Length: 372
Image (cartoon, rainbow, N blue to C red; front, top):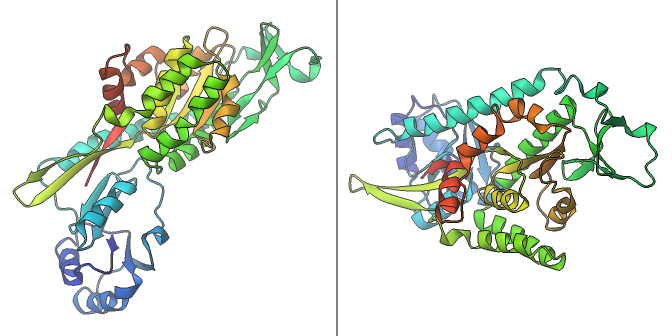
């Protein structure tokens, strides 16, 4: 709960009394009214046992990362416009203004359905990655696999993995050969580190506004043009215009007294692998603009986007937001990262084609409902 200095403190206390069966984790109170609020608590809600912190400005409030559990915030202020703007700037599943846990219909059940499904999938991926086993038990004996230390690399291009915002050598130093190049062969430990990087990147990127995400990604367009990648630059340009395709804030009035606003919040870590470079970049842009982090996988039969990763860093995309895994056979990575074959996984989120539906529908599938 966040209590601003212009809020009706008596209304806050009354709310705490009638909603005592909905426990709060913490109350943030603006310093100017903290003393009066503490006095009211002692006189009217003395049995309340909860941490109360103070703040000078809203930027002082420290939120815990918005994980896969339902995150609820209650904001109290008489300045409704300012409260709405603040609510839209924070990454929570459910936000109340001058109310707390006041539901109509099946709102909480609807949110719980979406969040619990995502929570189960994320937990299952992490459980699988915590199992100490190799992704491909036969990789050591593959005729196409080499230990980097045993190869002269003077005339051979070597490609590493990319996570935590930097190029990373595979833990076991194993590489697979293709077209006179060596590419890192991700092991179980590499994949786990990459996924953890993507989770951290998501925590950062999901709290960046969609407007700011677009501004960051727009820096990629002139770089692509300078390198002669005009088709990819056009794809990025289309996504820069994304807000025109989808109205991100919708709302209605319930019972002639309660305004309900619907926005979208990102899902989490999304896996990508495509044969076609244009399709890969189209899906990469829509995934990033939605606020998700990405792990791109490739092998000899797939698009290899490694040449663009230094460009991503130049555009100031935060570490962990875009990650790269290479493997001699990426189909062996799918069961743990996608929990399915990739075709089924991709069809869950993406559409084929160039119509406006290919922009709008995947955006909804790549995000969760967020209600104010």
